[in-house]
Amino acid sequence: MAGGRGVPLALLAVLTLQGAGAIKVGNMIVETEFYQRHERLQQEGGEFMFDFDGDEIFHVDLQKTETVWRLPEFGNFATFEAQGALQTMAIVKQNLEFMMEHTNRSQGAIVPPEVMVFPKRRVELGDPNVLICYVDKFWPSVISITWLKNGQKVTDGVLETVFYLGPEFTFRKFSYLPFIPTRGDYYDCRVEHEGLPTALMKHWEPQLPLPVSESTETLVCALGLAVGIVGIIVGTILIIKAMKMNSARNQRDPL
Image 1 (spheres, helix red, strand yellow):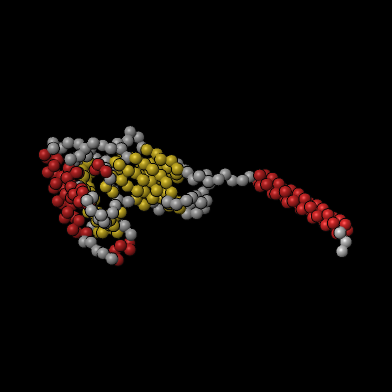
Image 2: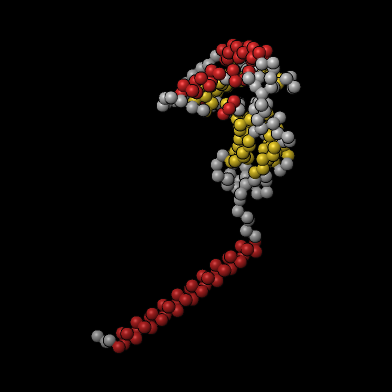
């Protein structure tokens, strides 16, 4: 990766905006862009996005030259010309080239990711849900996130966010997997990054109550029936005893 020093320059405008927002109370819209080059893999690319108080508003697909709104409804209230993002990215790329030449193509410090897997909401058997794989605090932004269900790769319905800026020039990213909780199923989020010696597997399976066996159900029903019968017998005895006591009292105290 070229640009341990180049990438911070590309993010300079973002950091300036964040610093300014820290001295006032209110909301903040931040423009984020970065450009990077991976020397060993001979890959290069970047990202352009806007966020509001840390939540993405939109990003620009630099390959298709189109604006992609985080929620489609956002596009009903605002517009953004994607061509402008390409012009900005060209400037950022020039900045990277300049810094690479003046830092002897020094390499940035690689930071491995932290990974968490959790459901979007409370898990109920048979109730559709979404698993979230949260990959945080990694650098550079060259990473692979894969979902496995019962050990087999799954791609249907998987959604992945763009890279979000994290602390200390690191990145964070989310991957979403829709699923239906089923007893016996388990899932893994597999993350590959050059900061990891091997792929990191984060395991998750639904914590569901154990099924009640047929014999247990029969025993519970039998116990319930027995308790009910005993209750009826005891109640009947108490009623008869109360009637006898009341009759005896009436005989001792005639009107």
